[in-house]
Length: 311
Ligand code: SAM
Ligand code: SF4
Image 1 (cartoon, rainbow, N blue to C red):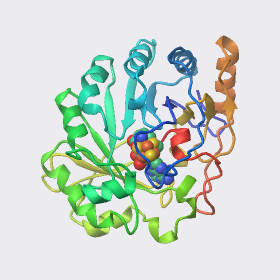
Image 2: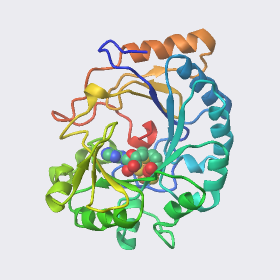
Image 3: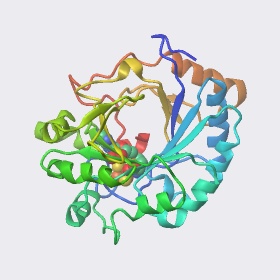
Image 4: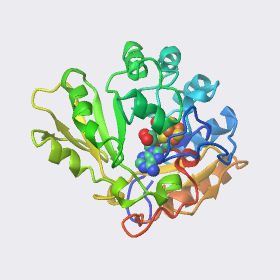
């Protein structure tokens, strides 16, 4: 289905919890994060099936941290059984993948994005406010061992924190068939008040690595490759090169609110709706999707932090 600006909406980001095993400084407060609540597995499946009837072809599960939900494999199996759903993906911080990756693969998850903002243990502890795992790449390796191909690693660039690791992250793509994606930090939640120097454009990756060669790609990332590299490099620039014109996404928060734009205040409550009423609410949300966000003028308009929406 198309929105009123003519964009075809095919992707749903479905958050299944606002809880998390980390407390990343840009995403959540250290403690006392207000809870939004979450729905049952059945409610998410009903909602997802209605979204697929409205034209959704791809679902990405997110959170909070989706792996903290014990019934995650059950949710994945249920989603996979929805006729018309072409792709099921998941974004995770990777903690717990060592035990869960095979179950997720068996449940029909097609692809994983794993978030990792630093390769240095002391920085990991400082950013996530938790003990680092023994091996920071353990989750990624476990996903690979479980048979997940085309792994993507999300690294949010934070000025003054990890820009000196751009080279180390690029090196990961030399021998591994992974896509390392550099993301611009978006001013929302705890980081909305951070100084401007924290918000780096992803062009700083190209400045540090002029040898990167652009390769063709689809989706929101510009894609590159180190000469002879086994993997690829993605640059995602919601601020410096907004991709709203080609946005094909809607989101549903863990507590069942439809957000047709990540940065808008507008939400449509879906919890409790069923059948045609549920479908009609989703269609209204798609139709009314805002044309663009306003991040170049001001912080995000949403009062929610990222863990409460689903990144
Ligand atoms: N917990 C999972 C994870 O970290 O991958 C899934 C949810 S998390 C909200 C999804 C992604 O959003 C992560 O890659 C995280 O780094 C990113 N993220 C969170 N807050 C952000 C912000 N203000 N700007 C840019 N990316 C952000
Ligand atoms: Fe948790 Fe992901 Fe937010 Fe970090 S970015 S606190 S891992 S939801």
